[in-house]
Length: 467
Image (cartoon, rainbow, N blue to C red; front, side):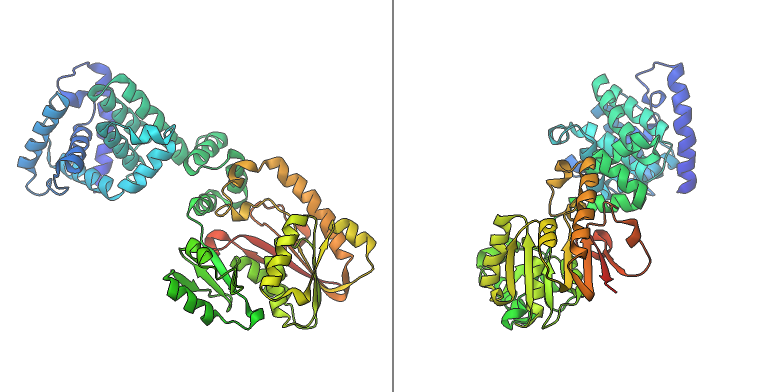
């Protein structure tokens, strides 16, 4: 088949030369390759006429004539006879296009101007685009030749405007696949995976194109959530699993944390059932749970959560204290702090949590208190949680990252003043944006979760000890 595809490549280029020498619109193989025409009509018959995909097989002579007759009746012009190589190529193109149809349609839809254009697309025009996308994306045919052939087919079989549309969409695909200059490639990726261009450029630079594409696919997928069992009430994961079984919710126990459960679907059912309001569990990503595990809160610890609200990590740490110790939950947002207090009361953890409404920088300057363990989950870009915060796709700007970095520096300075000698400071931010202080980028001493690799939110954690 590879030899046949190579032969087809040469024939595609030859047909382009023929096109420049003739204007014959009756014998269509002078306008485009005959198997492109036959494949398009064949796909129409399979999708709308109930034909089978495997008709062009070893009985090819007769089936080839039938396909040419169908093409002539459908399109209004005739083609030359199909030889054995043509039949095999038609079979390859038709079969491959059908197998990859959902993927091809996804790409075509992404590269259309809007969803309406895709939904209202003429059947033959859609088949021509599918063929072009399959030939470029899966058969690695010469892109310029494929574009030229499929544009010609659309123009002659439909109208000039259809050819222009095919030209525009296929060239976007070529730009995405072959790259061109960095700007055009970033724009193509941004269009295909629905992300701002600046994010694409940044991730491609730091992560590489393949990893950046995987991350964008993850961000656009339906998000998954995790539930954390409230062990502070003496509950176990088995108690939560029993409840989820009753609700018939799909789940899987976390492989990283004993008191976490991954909720595959049905989060609305969980919330509506009220088990969170009962204090049985809370919604918490595993990356947050692992960050708390790095801090290692223990009974008797005196802890401060520097940017606490809405309080997921605060509550997890409180459940680890078993009623012994104290957590000061500091946050500048009074409303979100109130939610934390209400949740702590609900889960029976209020006896070890004290809420403090303050700016950490002012608090650190005014207090003489020191703490065994200091958690600074600093405000960050949110680029590690885009699967759950789709609004940040378009509300976050590149300039925001620099501003956040400056804020993180100020908060880290403030938090460091609160650490007792021999105590621990844990610094956590979003790792995807790469605004991590260079001092922390070592091979040891930090935790880093990757959304694509670990199927959880992205997080970076450095655990520092005051000497």
